[in-house]
Every structure is written in C-alpha cells, then in structure tokens.
Length: 341
Image 1 (cartoon, rainbow, N blue to C red):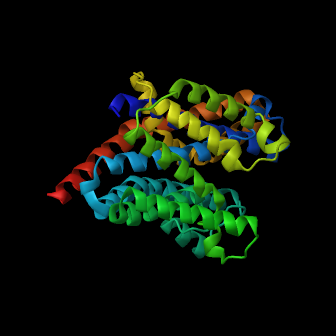
Image 2: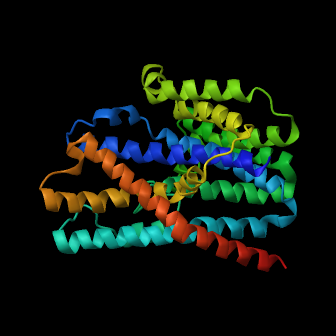
C-alpha cells in the first residue's frame, strides 16, 4: 500500500471522530429536553467507535506486517508514545475543568474519587473513568497487548488463532450469559470482533490483489447509512457488531484500495481525529459553560448553536494537531529510531 492509499483512510478517521462528537451533541440536547434538530441524524453516531476499531485492526496488522523485524518491544513502545502522553495531557485538562467547575460554580456532578482517577490514569479496563469514552482506549490497549504477544511470537497465523479464540470466548460468555468478574466485562465485550474484521482486511490486502473495492465501499456506505438512520439497530434489532461493524469493514476495505490524493487540510483533519475524539466533550463543557454565563441560556437550546459548538471543537482539535500533536509525533518517532540503533 502506498502512502496515498493510507491517506485515503484519513478521511474515514475524521468522519469517525465527527460522528462520535455529533452523537454527544444529540445526547446532550436530549438530556436537557431540547430538540436536537438535525442532530437527530446522529442518534447512532456511536458507530464512529466501530469504525475506529475496524481501522485499528487494519492499520496495526498492516504496519506490523511491513516491519516484522521491529519486534514486540518496539511495537509496545510505539503504541505507548502514540496513546498515553496525549491522553494524559487531555485528561489533565478534564480534571482541571472539573475542579474549576466545583470550586467556582459548586458543581458536584463531576466529582472524581481516587479510584476513578487512578483507573483513568492507567486506562484500566473498567467503565468508570474521567473521560467517558476512555473505555474504548482501554479496549484498544488490550488489543495491542494481544497483537504484540501473538503476532511477533507466533506470526500472522498464530495471531489469528489467538484473536479468534478471544472473539469466540467473548461471544460465548455473551450468548450464554456467563457471569465473569467485573474486570473482565470490558475485555470480553463482543465488539472486539471488529479488531478481527480490520485485521482480516489487512491480511487480504497484503496477500491478495484487492478487488471490488468500489462495490464494497458503496455497499458499506449504504448499510452504514441505514444503521445510522436506525434501521438495523432499532427495527431489525441487530447488534452493533453487525449493524455498524460489518459496514465499517466494507468501507475500510473499499477505501484501502483506492489511490486517493487528498487536500492537505483533509489529511490534517484526519490526523486530528484522536484529539477531537478525546477532547470534544471538554470543549463542549467549557464553551457551553461560558455561553451559559454570558447569555443565560443553554448552548444546546438551538441546533445552530450546536453546529457552532461542533465547529469550535473541530477547529480546536485541528490547531492542536498542527501546533502540538505533529511536533510531538516527530519527537517520539526520532526517539524510537534512536532506541533501535
């Protein structure tokens, strides 16, 4: 795969993060009994998480297959530097905002206990964390652990055996309602099959000549559109792995084979997806509170104001990527290269 084809997935990263961000605007308006207006279209915007998981499976398998000599130590170090420091920086901002909300406005709804703070810092696989979407990062880390310990030791075949066993055990505990300890409830979430979906695409792309990308992309977009409209999750009562995961798999497969030259701003938008994903709720909190103080009304009272809020979050993430995240990536990649010498 060329860099251009990888670039074609940047568009999907931006879309996935935006879906999640707009889903939270829909939920916030509903929580305050306001009409979400056009944000009703994003009632199932949580599908962005499923897209991210499929993308992660594809990218991790593909990049590791092209750099098998790096070994598990390099893989784990690269994943640490990619995930944790930016996450810790955003987590610190969340904590500061919560503390300011408590001491300035007496808001006790966002109190943080020591257990939650420590779990959040370590991205422990438990649901109660400071950043509510951090559970998805916890699951990503478990996937990295499974991948690193299997792929670099047992090869691709061994990885798929281990991955299939993980997925099978997850579905077994779900289908038969087997009780598991609380700390295993997240690792055994059936959504982990979406990492397998992405890894399968990566394997097919590396070992076989890609075919039918355009039909796959069209089918995936149509099916995802129907799911976002509620057709599959609400009418047919399909699980998210089917309603969102399979369309995401088709879309990733379709885009991975398209040689696409994107404008630089689109690439940057895609690159900023991690910051947008992590920080959009923080932006909503801070900007929403300032708006409420200045105008004595909720920013969620108008769909137009919600669009404005989304744009602020997007621009904030974009600028943070250009001026903070990119330089940081250059720094840690040089560090990794030096560690290999």
